[in-house]
Amino acid sequence: MASSTSLPAPQSQSKKPLGKMADWFRQALLKKPKKMPVNPESHSSDGSQSASQDSHRPSNPNSVMSSNPSSAHMDTSSSRGRWSKDYDVCVCHSEEDLTAAQELVSYLESSTASLRCFLQLRDATPGGAIVSELCQALSSSHCRVLLITPGFLHDPWCKYQMLQALTEAPGAEGCTIPLLTGLTRDAYPPELRFMYYVDGRGPDRGFHQVKEAVIRYLQTLS
Image (cartoon, rainbow, N blue to C red; front, side, top):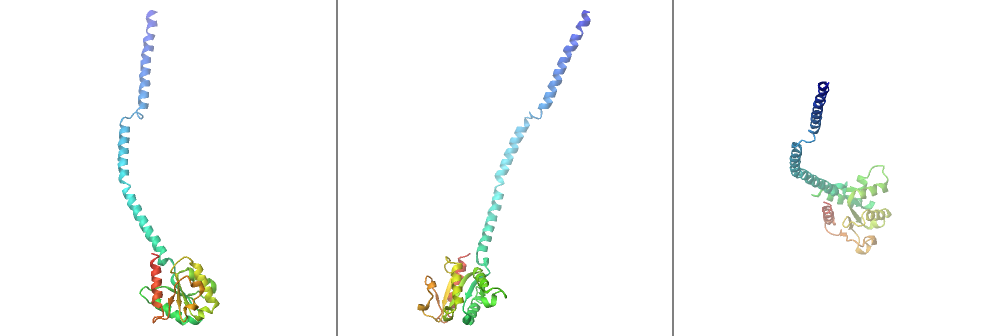
């Protein structure tokens, strides 16, 4: 009985170490992925490599970004320049001064600057309202040339053109260019007394001075 009772004890004692070993191996296997000693170094090395790569990367994006804003700036500057509107000059005149207005437009358009002119009877949309066409022409032109003659002063429609031209750009200096022809300074409209006019009594009737004034204004846009 003593030997039979002593045999089960070693068996139970031998099972306990085996269970502990099995548990240890299980824990070791489970903890291996978490206790990888190489991973922190590799991550740190990868982090240093990524940091070094990031330190080199900004040069390329910066070069792209520096090129894009410059091109965008060029695009915006060009869009704000001469080609942002359909016409360079809108010529306002009376009906009896149509011939003089046509000669002025021909002079401006045939110049080396190839100025784009709006002449109402030539460029207005057929069937369009006269007032709407005038307002559209003034807003679509950089400069306004007022051909001020005796007929201009006696035409209510011309006075409306003059006031509308002043309303379109009240603070823009140089965009409204009065061309005084066949009149003295005393007859100069009081609405325009705050700006200089071009004297049309010269040999070229002031056309050259008008052209230079338009070109000078267009150069301020670029």
